[in-house]
Length: 282
Image (cartoon, rainbow, N blue to C red; front, side, top):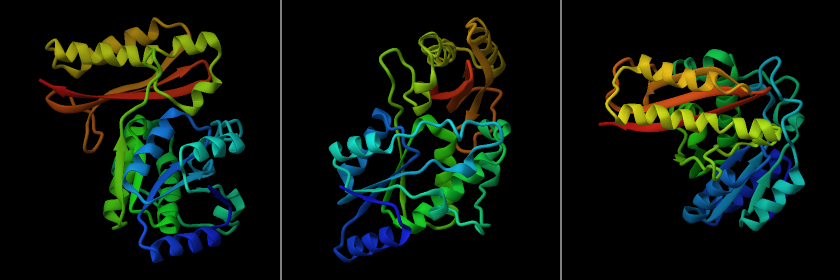
């Protein structure tokens, strides 16, 4: 495994891989890796000759008052995990290397970025689309892997890749969960023991919502109220949003039919967590 910090060095490696006819599987991350990230690496290893992972805490996707300064960082531990997972290259640039002082170009996927997290984190998906577009340009991957936990992010990136004609196969992999159902996230490390126990309310409320639909409920408003009641009953939790949306454009649906995405964001103490379920309405 080789650790690379400079863009020009990475581009030279990519040219070498291309010259040898090797396909490239790419997993972009912000570090603080867990088994969810390693599952993405495994999927990349299955289809690509060369696997490359980026570790970069992207400052432009954090809004004012968010946790950029306190986002967990442990590059040596991440590199150890990725080495054991069979990754070939890790790209870990400094902020100044990736965003020079005169950087002034951004990518925005407008409609898909507006609902759900976009309502509460203005500019977030512009930062996501920009960093991934730049990484796609540098890495030139054949395959790129993202997690379903960040469903809206994955949708934004898919649309960006389609609209801008990036020659990359964007693949979205299932959520990896702890034994009690909590979706694996780098932010889980910020939870106290009591908060960690309270955080299971996200998945429990999603399962309750899905059960209501499978039992015959077709009014989204009633399902939303049931979830709000469950979250409110947990003293350490504060609901930011729960929505049932169309899987194509993330727009809310009133009458439930076909495939829908149930998505929520909840503050557990000071830590913001997200989760979702895909549900096929009978």
